[in-house]
Image (cartoon, rainbow, N blue to C red):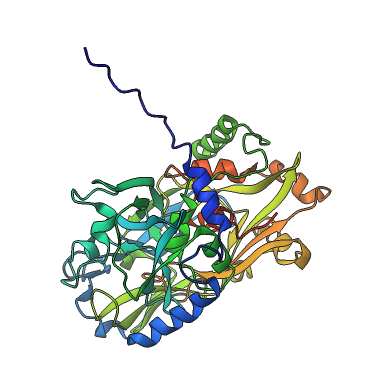
Length: 473
């Protein structure tokens, strides 16, 4: 009688230690010096021809406004569509509104390939051009592609390293010599996308990976240092890094609220959420004006929809035209942080956004574009915004400007911060008395990031800074 092999442990007991070792390596043992990465990106910009030019809507190739709905879409029906969104019953100073929004139901793939080199986990980053990035090239995941891209709906070249990530049967980490370290569906910007999700995955390989001049291997620690540079590590890399199952120190099993209490609070916030968001034809969106070159808010706030012509020598397709959403003003994305019983905590909010499935995910303490509130009375400003903007520099534990998803947004920038709050700060000590706010530890947020529908993309950007050691307590 044969004996069945014992069941394996539910979690890899050594993975957190291997990730921590990678986070500790910033120079020694790395394949490229951290200080050389910006110059390498600049060299890759010079190696290819890149250009992005604003054009009239009439010059879009294979894109057109539907004569009935007014929606702006591609003639093939692929890629994405600019439609309208109607939100009713929302909380806050503006309970109802309509706006343009990007509808892209297909799920994209964001994948980082990992490999142990000289005993240290390294991650394969790509110098990828996105037309909306202010400096065009940033550090992208190994694979960053929509389904239309990697199924070659554009009839372009194959997506490089797709087979290394997906394996022979088309599933992440499949086949010998590959395994999945993290794999989860995560949301994108709920104010600009309608229920858009990407598959965020980390795949480790033991195979040799062919070198290519547009790719480099970096450790977690190096990525943490590079996250201190403005507009260098792109949004898609940040969201994948947030899903890495790292271990946080500082007694991660202790927190102000038990995990079940935190989940129960969030469930209650979702159950009380009464706003309803529905897609409507773009032509029915009031308060916005469509011109020859842009669709703009009547007061010049929020964002515009524009058209661009792109040349990109290193992409699967060398040139194309497309619409982009161009935000007005720079956003502020910030966590307030404090120690509770000696343990670092972050103040999260149950953030309602029209494009999020179910309406609510956990976001940072502050997530807004201040200019959008300039016309409102002072008591309508987002809570804690003035606390963040007026913070003494000695209390700022992290600060950098990062661009959002450059494939759909033009010049979308956010000032990202982690601000330490003193224990005797009365406003933050009473923060949980405000509806929709709770203190949570980084370890609790990392656990939630292993599942979809919990942390929004802005929260994941800041969590990636903790995951990689960019934030020092």
